[in-house]
Length: 166
Image 1 (cartoon, one colour):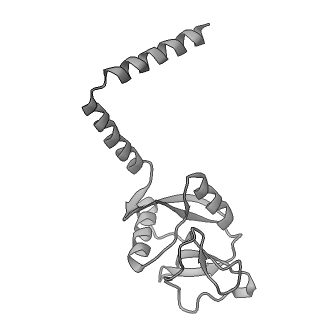
Image 2: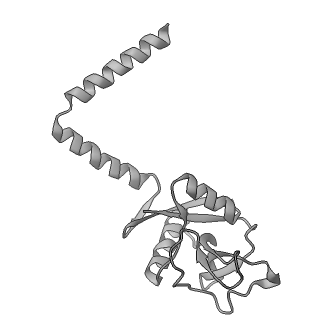
Image 3: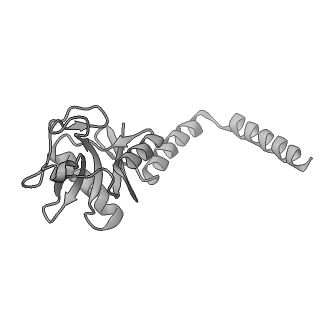
């Protein structure tokens, strides 16, 4: 009985608050939404938003986690974007941690794709990479070695990752 009364009071209170809001107040609410998005861990760059997840997962688990947030593992289209993703990682960890991004050649060796379907036109490969060591390196991570470059690595290894969404 108490739950029904509390629910009814809560609904009535929300209805009164909504009815009392002047049009200017609604504009403020939209600005609040943008502020909340910024504080939720997403960083905007151009028309895309990035989020660093510091939980080590396999590449496939990381992609599934990104999809849960309506995103994908990050694709990289130029050096500026690569540097931006590095900054997202650095701000979260105060270091340049080795991190999954959305590149893979698991479908066919040597044909790299971005998981979000964008064209693979840019890569900042480390020297001698991708090398498909032991014929089992089909996923991409970044910030490898002191050069902080891209490397191919087995997909079942566990790393933190960066998601991107529009």
